[in-house]
Length: 372
Image (cartoon, one colour):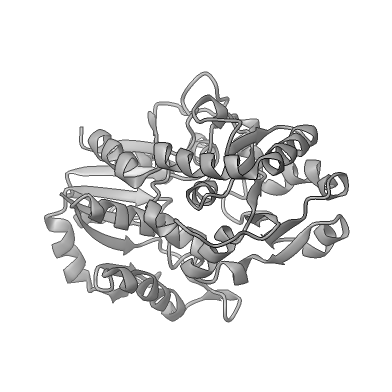
């Protein structure tokens, strides 16, 4: 089978976002499928060197190349700039790649265009990594946005409760199928010793879906004083109010520096004792069942995860290796449990990753549903 994957590696040129697309590509290839990466969002890329959106896509296209080349995919990509210029492979090459493709997977809006070559691919699926936000945006009824999603054969989401009675998020006439971010487990296995830090990588407020709101800051303020209630050190790699957080006892580092490359991001995750993860308000309030691709990487590295419950506890193990919280008191209890038997929780973390997120299990199920 041949799969064309649309992703947002250049649009958000940071390690965590890159791993999301990369693990689809590597996981599919390991299953014997041919893969090609396309990015066609119509937006300018962010250049972290200049710290601005840039009309010049040079940083983003170099970033794609540097991310894919070590895995033998250096010539298996194309980037379409906002002005329609193709980088990497040519427009004609892309049309040829699509001509014999079987499946088009659009991850997180990796393309907002329905070019003829995409439409001709027999099976087309969208993978929603922002459950709640995506559905609320569709519910606003903007014609082009609704029509864009109507053209997919299947819609998938990381929100396990979306479209069920467990979630308050409206879905209208759309059917959303549950999936998880696939993890290529060997890429995360480590023997490195962790530091004594519960960590996370986070953005205080996202710039997309501004009209929907429901960001992480709304939830995190509930846990602002947590460091004063425990001796456990924390370290947040954050794009946000580092000075304010530091004043409340949170160790902070620059999220962009920690995430500059896929290797940097992986090193930070694997150097952590465990994850402490707060979710966006929309995920929590809407009981979406969202589960983080970042948390999956912690688990695959053998790092326990203590993360806010969005309704995911109805679908995944909770209590050993992976622990949920919905209040500061539950978060404190979770910290004590992990520290009380760290070896147990580290072992269970890796087992959960293998049982639930292994690309070799997630991707066949996704392709089977996508090709029905």
